[in-house]
Length: 297
Image (cartoon, rainbow, N blue to C red; front, top):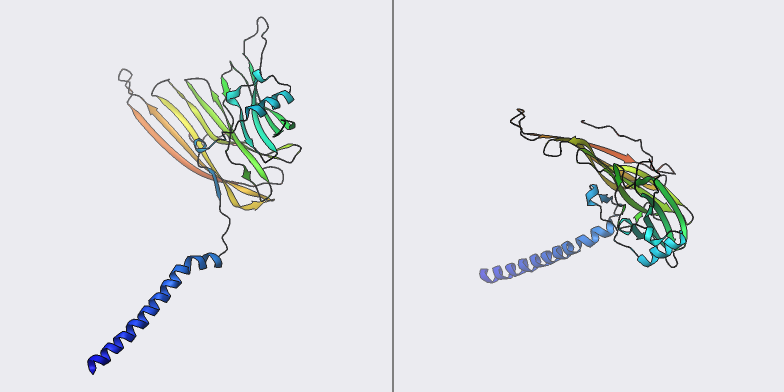
C-alpha cells in the first residue's frame, strides 16, 4: 500500500514539475520577442570613420556620364585628370562629381616654370544627360604641378549620409602634402555638402581630420607630431541636423638613429594626447574654431 501510494504521489509530482518546466521554456523562448515589443529602441550613433585611413571611398565612376558632364562644362575630356575624379549617385536623378581639370600654363621668358595648373570642381549633374545642376570651383584645392605642395585625390565616402530624416549629404576628404623627404608635412580635411536642387551648400568645410608636421634627416632621425581624427553622427540633433562627435588623438614621436662618431645614442620617444569635440549645426553650417596649434612641438 505504501509503495502504491508512493508511486502515485511520485507520478503527480513529476507531472506538475514537467508542466512547470514546459511553461518556463515557453516564457524563456518568447522572452526576446516580448522584450523587443516592450522596448522603444533609441537611435544609435553612426560611426563614419575612426581615422582617415579607415574611410571607404566610393568606387562609382560613370565615364559616359563624365563625358557628357565635360561637354556641358565646356571642358575638353582630354583635359580631365581621370585618376583624380571621384563620383557618387546622390539620388535616382542626380550624381555628384569631383573633377580635376588640367589647365595648360604658358610660361613667359624669364618667369619660373610652375608647370600645369590643376583645378578642382564640385558638380551636381542630371543622371541622364549630364546637365549641370550646380557647380563650384574650390580655389583652396588648386595647385601648380611644380609647387612644393601637392593636392591628392578627393575621396568621397561610399555612402550618402543622412543629416536628418529628410536631408541626404555627401562627405569627402582631400589631402594637401609636401613633396619633400626632409620637410614632413601633410594635412587632410573633411567636407560635407548638401544639394537643394539649385545650389551646393557646404555644411561642414575643411575640418582637419589628419595632419603631420615635423622634420627629418631623410633617414631614421626625425621629430613629428600627427593628428588622427574620428567622426560619428550623434543620435542628438541641433537646429535640425545630427551633431557630429569628434575624437582626436595627437601623437608625438622623437626618434634618433645611432651615430657613434657624433656620440648620438639611438632613441625613440612617444607621447599621446586625446581630445573630444562636438560640432553642432547652427542653421547654416557646423561651425568650428580653426586650431592649428601643435600639442607637443
